[in-house]
Image 1 (cartoon, helix red, strand yellow):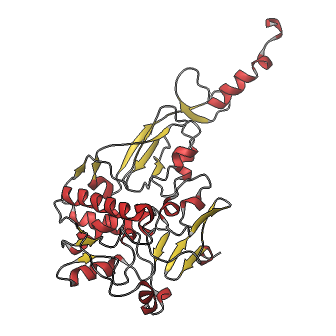
Image 2 (image 1 turned 120 degrees about the vertical axis):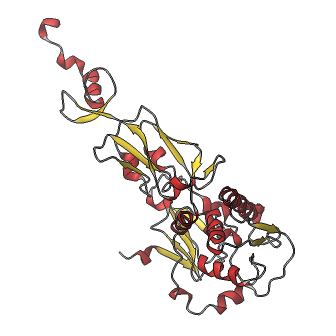
Image 3 (image 1 turned 60 degrees about the vertical axis):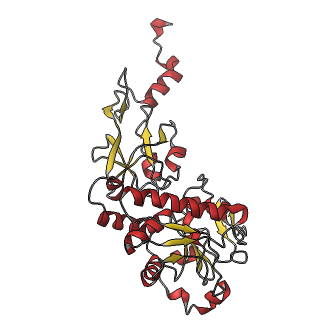
Length: 338
């Protein structure tokens, strides 16, 4: 089947069901788009995320919260906004003039725009508080958080800061007029994944190690406790391949540059060994997807079943054989012992 069969759309807004975490793993609980949508255009049906085109206004308010880029607006690329900022003497991002909601930008997007333009710009939030799609202030809070996080990284790198203004600015074009002005929007390409653009720009601008001690929403770290059995299910189910085996299968490697914090590895682990943790962020290691060893296993051959397993201590028996021997020890009793 073609990917297009799994794509739902409402005007220029598109939802790629194949990229969605809720569809990739039935037990994943990601609800970012459901929580932020003011019109309840998303719903869970048969454990899958569905879009109701009749309810969706294509405002783009949910685009920035999606960790897998499953939600996007056609003809609405980062490159378009970068050109706009470069062309303006007083560079400003705003939802007026028929542009999509500023919540369309994640903190990574804002950093990318700053690094790409090498120019200071302002986010105008004057219309956010009373906007019809900003219910319970969710969109405004997301925008403010994204700007704050973007400035944290930009400051650490010695780059220009993003300003915020609440100075009233009237819209020049209605949203409906903006949509009608688009000619064949379906012929436009979807923008490049924000993480790819962001990391490329980081590599171009980082000349040395840059450390951040604060928690960053899009950078995640994992740890694995000794109870790990080396079953490999966390690796198999990781949607971004952030977890992997070493060539000899004795080590589990982790790349924080690939992790999106979906929690699937933690949920799938039967021994409850893998956990989210917090560490000092090195932006260079993040940008280049540097791998770290989370755990090293002592692989031995079970003396009964002759299968390889992660040896902990005691007799050289795998857990399966230990369990079987414990549960059926009566079978192995000799007649002279009875």
